[in-house]
Amino acid sequence: MSSNNLNNVNNARVKGFLFVMVACLTYGIMPALTQLAFLAGLSVSTVLFGRLTLGVIFVWIRIFIKKINFKIGKKHIGYLLFIGCALVVQTVTMSESYRLLPGAIVSLLMFLYVSVVVITEICIGREKFDKTRLICVVCSFVGLVLVIWTPGEGIVLSVTGILLALAAAIGYGLYVVGVGEQRTRKLDSEVIVIYATTPPVLFSLGMCISLGEPLLPQTAEQGMYVFLLAFFCLFVAAICFTKGVQYIGASNAAIFNTAEPIVAYVAGIVLMSDEIAGSAIIGGILILGAIIYLNLSSRGKAAS
Image 1: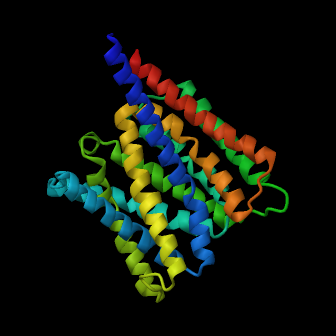
Image 2: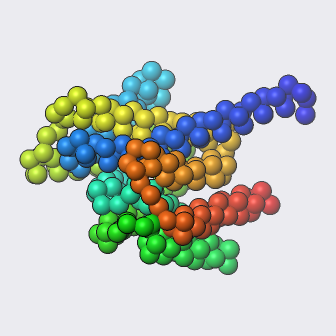
Image 3: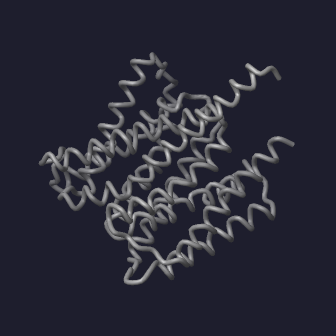
């Protein structure tokens, strides 16, 4: 390989890791920003509708600027809307869990979606059962037990909050399995976002109307939080993670994305004064370690 080609490869790797790190940062601050939005007086439905709708508008702007082809078949649109229903479960239950649990705890529990993906893909025949996957799933659940039973001094975890976070992990796991379908993987990520987020947008709109909650923020502070969540935690995060995958591949991007709960933990301490026990952190390491090993194992098999 020539020196120019080697430099190009190294530059691509650096750019890819930087994009993924930006995605980790923007996804990681979402729990603390959401909790601050609640403290500012916003309801779950208003936060969801504002974040999703404004975020999708940003994605549409990018589509038109980049002239991305968003026209696909009606059946495929129907499929994306169907898997978008899993996003309804994920977005609603995750947002509700932020009201009841520290953001770092929610982020750690949310990463159990990888185990959901593994189990589901084995059940539907997309992946084969092996001992490595079983061990990783078991480690994830051991980590889950440590996180739940020993959250930290003075922290009493809500059972409802735990169940909501786990429901969010299941919902997101099923969505990821749906996106892994062969036709869908060939689409631009922006196209997937605009169609798959339609059910959550409509559901959050229905929540606002049925609960009598405002569709729009009522104060400048509330508007600031909705804008930050929409721009950074939906638009920037999604685009940067996609760019990272394009530069360094899905496996490497997924491995580095496990830094997200660490960012959530730090953001929770800085912005929300969260404190988590050492044993809960060990549980989180078990969860993240199992996920990293799953990715490394999958990458090794793909290369062989």
